[in-house]
Image (cartoon, rainbow, N blue to C red):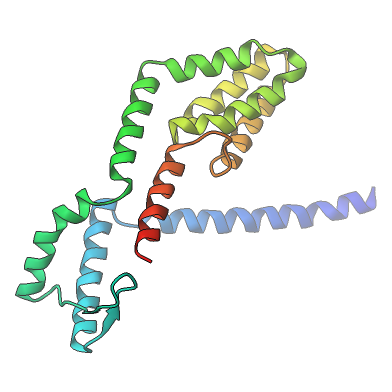
Length: 208
């Protein structure tokens, strides 16, 4: 009893320190500007960096052609013209763009129509009770075909599945959350993130 009582303050103290660290990270994150303004702040940082590198006459060698390309000053008239003229080509030529638009279009249609949610409910609801944990975990890992919406769908669905089976809904919530988080980059199915990464990898391979 003495060892148990003496160990509690240590655990409580470590938990409090962890919560303080997480609270500090949350407060710092909440102080960040809106993503719209972050984009323009980063664009301004890029422009200033280009001006500094251009003044230092920095250049790079393209691995595909071997040509030397000097850094352009985006704050100059010629640099601003270059940025404006190449913006559309850079956006349209972004390798994952076509794949991303098609994937998100398909995911949005199936999600808004309720098809994905219905399939997940059928998958979990018709499994025997002894396979409940496996069913929830596997469904959560494969739910990333609907991208980040998997968290919104699977966490309450896991809790409801456990509750209907007479088990703790909190346990179902934890199983669904952990499986969804683990399966984010280890899903047995192809997800939108996989399509984006494959497009980027293919474009990078062509530069060599």
